[in-house]
Image 1 (cartoon, rainbow over the protein chains, first blue to last red):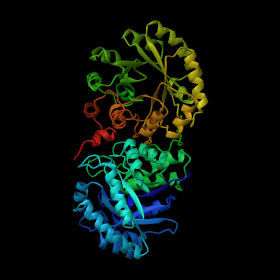
Image 2: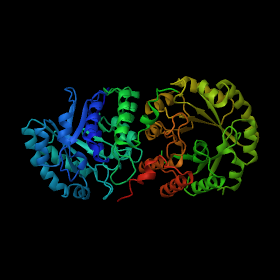
Image 3: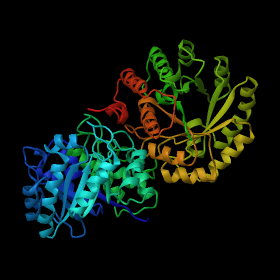
Length: 292
Length: 292
């Protein structure tokens, strides 16, 4: 292993869990991220504005972004209407979420896990016909805030079903920061994803990534500045901060394509755009190579 | 490996880097920690009150603490006068610091590393004669904020010298949060300590501990609530939070003797005593087993 692929999720997953910011600020954030060398950005979601007001201007944001040919931009969608909007907007990487936890799926999507799996089965051909790929994000893979531990076999069952139904890629989401090194080992010994999405809610973010690296996983989500937060623990942090992830990876000699100084500058910009102190140690203290 | 020994350092190392709090608050913090099941507490330091005003009341704090026979309490000292005070107060575990970085040692102790090593050589017999043990904490072992990377061979040289001079135990201090999993591997392949003291300044705290565990280290410092902070990066976090460490260790099936719920309650108490929001995810969000 010599390189790791980071997908920057602040513009979508991060901002979805923050107070709304203006369209112009979202465009500025995505364009600044595009300048860091990151190769993948989750840009927007196409959801109903009543469900997620933070993403109500997704079409306008995307129309104004300075899109780079070398960057893979993705969009999250919840249903057929969202898929149609994303495809019409030109996205060729589509993400869809299902929770391994039935309770969480019902709270999040108002249907059972099985019903969501049926929805995904009918979305896949629609997206494939348009020449796009489908990534299924399995939420609560490392635990559910309502049900507690999730049996790895249940996650494996969801993965088997969506793979059979044509999903191109699988991500495991640590939706509320319940992943730990032990749970990463337990789950990955049962079933392997393409990409892992960790939170740092309980301080284990980088320890989880380290564990996953040792198990051969090379694709991770991260959010500049740790933008996001945890919907079930007000004031707690959510997504791992991209600059903390990149700082550790580069120190290990792993390439990400990202310029860490530019990334930290982008985190500083993000902090101003959001108007709050972001939970990132590398943003506060700089990289370990920055001397007094 | 079935258990890990945690030394709680908030009362000394933590409070030394916070605004001063009343004597009564310090006593309350130590007594609350003693109730958590933790087996080792760094209680005070005996330093000149002009150098560290936060520890000016060390004798009074220690006199009022409800000392438990099952807990090992330690004190840090900078010189002969400090050693005499600590021994007179009854401490039988004495810590002394030297920096692997000459520049940091001069800034911190106003003498070269070699001069401090000579001081330690004369302190050891004094402490041993009183029936106490000496732990040498090698600061800046993972990097220096002035000099940058520290060659593991230099740390190994310091360790060889103090061991030859009779030190009973060695700790490596990650003084400004420059340790990473890669640096932990690099240093421990050259020389091994008894105990590791990590900071979480750049988010790598638990990843560092995980790496050290895999290399067989079973003793770690930690500070309840992450009390402390980084002297060279205002607003950045310092010591790893004890409850985050214990949360990860217990999830791995490793025993610490600590009651995590009581520890989190103590972190809540500490937050009130200090009057500021402490940097601990497990304090904010609770353990992963706490459901909505």
